[in-house]
Length: 194
Image (cartoon, rainbow, N blue to C red; front, side, top):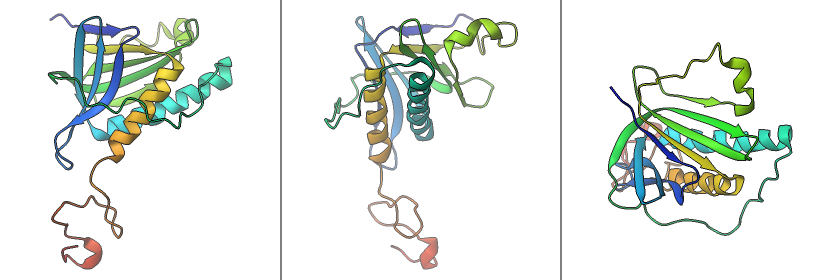
């Protein structure tokens, strides 16, 4: 079976976003460019972890390769909703990250869910030659979304992803579980509505 590689190097827009009301949100990564629009579904925890690992990757790129990182922008960047139609190409199982030293860009690869557990890989493309014998391309027959971003665009993606993750239902001040509009059964109140 053939697989598709949706490559955006670079995209016109690459964002994390949601569809649906808090508590029932579906999370997506969406890339737009060259007249194409690709949306892939993933879990909230994957979006949160992706933002965290991208921040670590930028910090490591600065430390190891002297990459100039943009300052944290006080101005809110792209806060627009996802482009429509939001048609899910596939559900993400694996996220791969790399820093390309030659072009000073971050490469994000979202691979369709297969039979393996979802994971996030953190690596550098410049180590590619050393590991060719050991690391076969995982899930070669699965669809993937590949995006190449500048450090500035990566920083903007991180900020938006964090806003999207934090925009859900507020946590209960006692137990930390999400509060529904009608409240919830708080274990700290022995099952009484809060």
